[in-house]
Image (tube, rainbow, N blue to C red):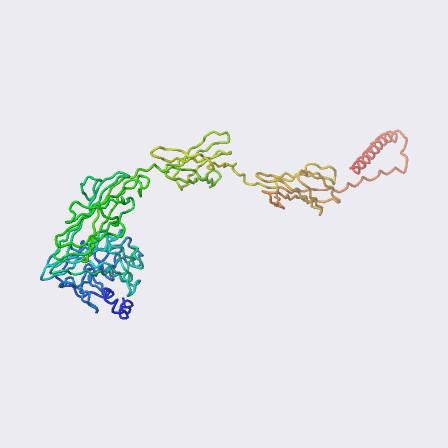
Length: 618
């Protein structure tokens, strides 16, 4: 606001009058309270938590924002002067000001949409006339707030809007302001906004605005008029405000004017703006007045530049009838009901007034062609036995019903059917190993009937694999399976494997500093020791485990003791006696005994030599 006031001090006097609408209001008489509706109020320190207009009670610039409409003499060129009611002087202009403030806290970033301001001006003549300012937005709560102000005089008077006098001022416009539509004095109102007239007003003091417009006081000889707009079935002269027509039908419009003031009104101009969905029927314009009570043909300018129908004394009147054709079915704006809102205006030197009439017509549309296709299927494994399925869809002019996921085994037999929602995955569990396929069937509803889409790309294979075996690779045993000779032995190694495991090679350590590395399949090895002694034979196995080499696997059972015996010592040779024995009877008997012993000894010697020879062969 300080920046805005600084701008005001540098504005030329030519622009000063509308710009001064931005300054703070003067104190409002306590007796005048004419605002509504009743609503929640807020303060500067505690702004609103939603979009609402003009509900802060301690605004440092305008005070209680509920009193947001004020008026002053348009000739005032200094700050202030704003009141709820001022004395009207005939022939003078007065400025009406409307304050517009979205009270939502700035931290919420809440923006009002389709924000409009309108000022309802009285059309009657009296000594006191009130006007009402309205601020509304589609997403505000309440949707519309209002406040009154007025003019009083000792004589009867009326007021007329000064065309082109509606402007908006805020931090975005600066002191130059931005012009608003003259629709501000109609039932539609004029769209406003912060940096453009787009209806968007953010919350916070920074985005508050002042809207101003001018009215002219006429009297004590009042200058006033009224006008009305009606519609009728073509040629029926049954005038109504709202008529139900058929596509392609022709309708008639009536615009009436009457001078209800006390002075003559010159340059009375009729104009009508046809909306989309209707077209003017050339040559259909008829003008009626006191000089032509039955009407006469006139030119077609009423729907373009407008028609000046002349001057009219007090209580004088004129009327205009013309025809318009409703668009045929295919050229109506929208399918279903259409309300064709037709606005006419009558403008005099004392102001401009508008009124409207409506035509209701229904466009029959063929149901749009439906299209629906399954766009793809994702199959994602979660565990060995659990999978998630998720399909996509492109659907136009149809309603999604469901996806059905059908699972079949490799023989084509259906094993499961699961229903799923759009853009969501479904889980499927199958413990039986094998190869499977899943297809997603899309079901939609078209005009109340369920239909399914071709499977197309929404079919995928997947597999439940065997339970993986934990690899086992150990050296189970080393056995001495045969003693070939005193110093030669045969060994056999036994590995233990399971899963994705194979033997790559064996490394035998015979305990005599001799080793042998052999490939798989050569589990049995024979080794000859060079010297007698006690040895320990060992073996280490190199495995291939899931494609990786794992060497040096052994165990306590993969070693065996070996004893290599010494070569045996041969027995000593017998000694021959030096004397022959006696041959006497006693000696003969002894000799017989000795001879027998000798025979036994020779026999024992021969046997021991044979045994030693056999041992050495081994």
